[in-house]
Amino acid sequence: MQSVSSSAPRAFTLSDFDFVLPPELIAQHPAPERSGSRLLDGTGATPIDRIFRDLPSLLCNGDLLVFNDTKVINARLFGEKATGGKLELLVERVLSGNQVAAHMRVSKKPEVGATVALVGAPGTHDNLRATLLGRWPDAEGPLFRFVLSNDAGDDPYTLMERHGHVPLPPYITHTDSAEDAARYQTVFAKNPGAVAAPTAALHFDDALLAAIDAMGVQRAHVTLHVGAGTFQPVKTENLAEHQMHSEWYDVPAATQQAIANCRARGGRIVAVGTTTVRTLESWAQTGLASGDTRIFITPGFHFKLVDLLVTNFHLPKSSLMMLVSAFAGYEHIMALYRHAIAGQYRFFSYGDAMLLTRQTAATTGSIQTP
Image 1 (spheres, rainbow, N blue to C red):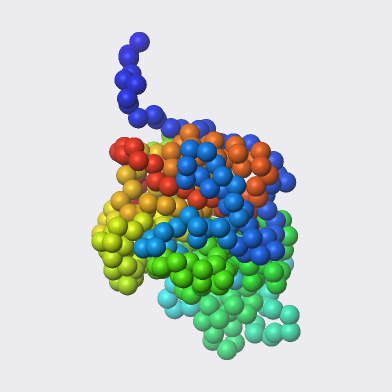
Image 2: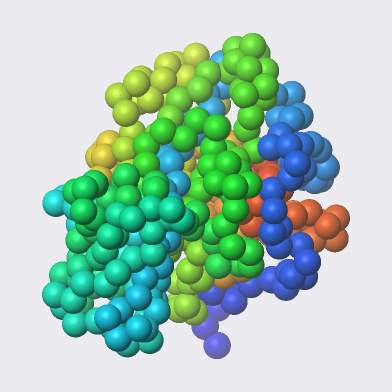
């Protein structure tokens, strides 16, 4: 038998990131108050149960909070083929020329060139429709390219805002409501394009942001348009075989300067959400401040920018479970999840949050970069 050095980094497989979650812990609705959610403080060896509005007490003057300012679009559209068959579109990306790239759920796919009637909002008579042009991003692509149109010639963002539905995650079982329209969106959402919310930022309200500002903690924003792939579990036991979905990101010049200033004054960079981590580390790895990223962060990844992470609790076997394990340490994360389940924390998009600090033991590993 070949001996293996005890100092060799552990080789992780998909099964390492599985856990049993009681279904009643999957939050179906947001907490009554954004900052009233629970916060599991995982910055030390022993977990501490807190309330999210306690976060300022865990920050320091000179720290920099970095948020994802993407805005969730009403990306879910329903329609009917000429044959009467039902169809559902989930718009993943808005392209040029009133075109969109979308997921399509339908029993039998329409022919290329076919136009389907889409369901408009009650009381409207826009003659909303979608014409199938082919697959995207290429002939073998997983998405479908449509032209969205109406009689008035409105652009896709306008059409989705008027007629679309909030693209709630697959584990939320109710149809979207006015509550979802308000709460499945951050208070500072600015740049439309996401089909899933950057959920760690949902806990911030105006009062909490004011308290953070008063402490001398700085704020900056990046944009990453979260795609539906964020909910897809990794399916290959060998993590190196997994192909990450692509998402568009941007790190503005003002944020680049804010990060440089934070480093110069000895402050900590606090990423709000895994999407912010993916954006910042994509930029740090490639030097590209804007573009598409397929970065896949697993244990062994060397973080270049992020010191602290505010994040919600993630799906078993998901790439985000691997990301937080890479950031805070696998054993530590699994212990925090056991504590959260025993303590009846609320999980996933409308659930509670935790605060993590980057593990100090630097190791190297493989990643997929943009």
